[in-house]
Length: 323
Image 1: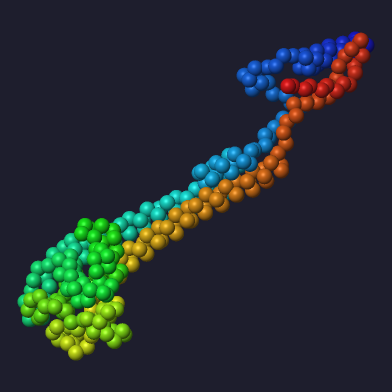
Image 2: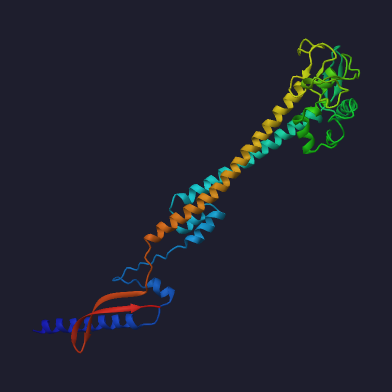
């Protein structure tokens, strides 16, 4: 009998203590962060996944590819793929831009920034640059004075006197700037000894003589035979081909190689822009997918407990709303 009474008393004390604890939990003031960390509620599992802002994620990835994905979900694979693509694109731009610059320096040096030994028709050698403006100016002045009504006048010849970008473009692009190349000049404007001569012009398809109005230069005759190059004083060489100068042909190839490198760098630049756009769109996709499974905590918490009121043990349901 005493054991039964003792057990009953223990149950009442335990129930009272439990009820008091639950009531204190319901009505207590907000705990400090440190107290919240030390207190673990065994009867409640807190779920609190805040939704992510898709617009913010899009802007972040548009500026820094992968940043928006990392903000929305750190474990998503595209948070790491887009930065790798970004690094690859930037690396490609730098590499091919530098290669283009190196090739540009090469063709500029080839044209008129290094002295070479050039062999004349009689076997003697001279020291010269491959392209010389003085040779160009001498021959173009002869051409301008052939006919006062043709197209060859000052506005037609506008070669820069400085080593500008336009200068290096013009000497490889336009046939009327061919006169400065050494192998052209010493075949068509000089004899085999290198002595200056007036070129022999061929009017071409217009079937006109140099003194006729509308005369347009089509080709020129070599002033001495060169069996090695196939030049013959009886056969005109067209001015709009590379047949008259292998130096110019080599120069054009070098310029095209540089342009190819710059074009490749531009492709990488376009790829870089596309990576930013694709990353921004993917950030929206990732954020939307994350938000579909997100559960935002409403702040309402429920817990079942046993309370003792008026000496009766009563099951109870507590609702706690923090705001």
